[in-house]
Image 1 (cartoon, chains in turn yellow, purple):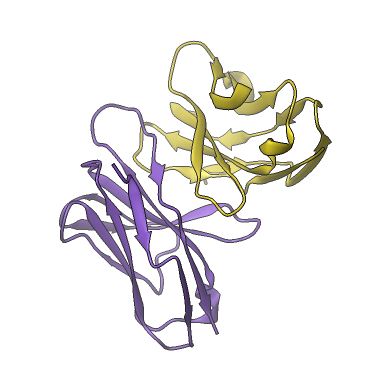
Image 2 (spheres, one colour; image 1 turned 45 degrees about the horizontal axis):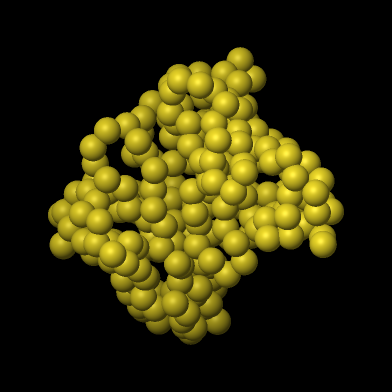
Length: 113
Length: 114
């Protein structure tokens, strides 16, 4: 079955530390890839997306992600996190341009000041 | 432009009661979705709609019904609520054109079933 895996369920970092959150999917066809963020008490907001072209995608608030097709991965990175990045992060994948998204289970990030 | 809105924001039900959650979008999107979010499980698709008058089952449809009588509205109904339906419910919408599959989410409805 098609699935999306986020292996880090909880991550705790200090401010200014670098961040990398893993996302892997199981599907051999064409994919569209997304990272969404959910700040405490708020709804999901799009951080960045990949459809085609340059596999290194830059999003809002200094986040970026790299699509590595051979590894079926789309890891999220940020060089220096801030306390305000405390949130839950979801990877999502659309397969073969489907109008449905499959979400990972999420990663809760806590940034300590 | 309000985007995607949901009512109510919070609700507490007793087992066996019924209720309807309303989702509205003002972006003229064709596709609309209902998800539930449970701790450690991400978002799971309950039902979705690809246009006015059409609905389809998602990953976890049991115990829920939906209707899309108007393009801008997507209703989620619970006929006989159960404690297992305690969750946060999110509605989302997406435009039809192109392969840009970005979904826009509403603020969520927190439902507790006692």
